[in-house]
Image: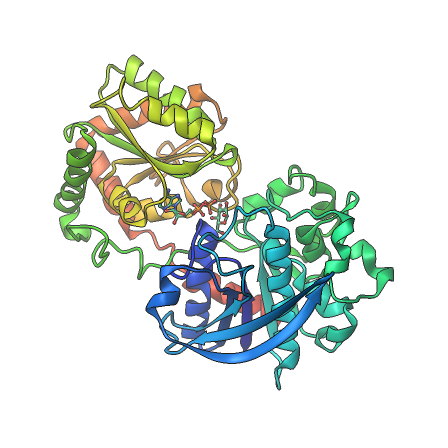
Length: 471
Ligand code: ADP
Ligand code: GLC
């Protein structure tokens, strides 16, 4: 089959979170299964762009409301990611350093999607499926089916994967003229609660919808940032397919980001070496269990609970552990976390920002990884942690619920709690401390974690089965 993925992120080209990791891995595994997988994304001004060679494969132009844009599609020459990578260059709009966070993101992603559809419309053959990811690509199914210029694409099956329904790309109806001329009787397929909602539109128009874990799909029928009723109504075409991890990139035996590689046979030595790097750099005590948090400092991740939970744990458990936090996001949370550096020096430290290398060192060097998420569609961090022999402490929600088994259950290897509350986090840290004291048990669990297979093989095949059901 020939699959075209449409996405805003893809590791290592540009990554803001887990979407980038998934988009960088899934097509590669689909190619390994014998299919043609292509991926198209905006051409941002990232290192990858300057370090690689590209060919121009198409040039076109379109108007978006009163604006006129020329676009160029470039293709990375060697398919070094394991699949064909195409970038959409729109001067002045997409060629910026960051993926998100600009005032004109609505214009940027709408223009990106128009360019993609316009380009596909010019192909001599057609892909067997167009697979769109999140709201940034959510208008693509609507445009393929309802814009007069592109209606010859209407029969191509489309699949939407929802990585995060919190962000929906809402646009006022005053921006409806941005879309290429469409059958206005179909306006309802763009609308949700009186605005243009690209994510809702994709749920309505895509032939099939997937979420990145089973539990998240169930949860969205109850709570989906305003889209609950839509998920209840469309449940017939929705299915959960759990993410995998790229176990070639995330492998402590070959990971070039960590100083000392290790595998199952030298796990203790390897993890200790990485822990030492962290403890030296962040002034932490290597003798104590190390708890880390890595991620976006936002409400979804319950990052606002961390300062209190960390402070209380250090205070009540007499500083018998250490904490290290890496992340960026809400300025208030960043401020609170940074402010703890001084009073909790020796027990705690934080690094505000995005740092791929440090994140790998932390997965390798930590004893426990904290993920108290309020919402977690899948979560990759817990799976990375496990691959590096680090015990996940997670809230029982979404993908965390589906991938972690509590040590209280038969064969368990993680710690789970139910409520996104400070007390639940501190209690779980307490449980972790007890586990840490039981050396033979913790050693067994770390070894077990490293052997859990969360790789993409199975899930990549599930997507193929889904596409095939649409042919
Ligand atoms: P989400 O996509 O919701 O942010 P995931 O768990 O799916 O959450 O994926 C997060 C990805 O982003 C992981 O690869 C994680 O290591 C990475 N990440 C998040 N924050 C940072 C950071 N500050 N520095 C480095 N990597 C980060
Ligand atoms: C989103 C979700 C995260 C998921 C990732 C990849 O960003 O928040 O839970 O793992 O996408 O699907």
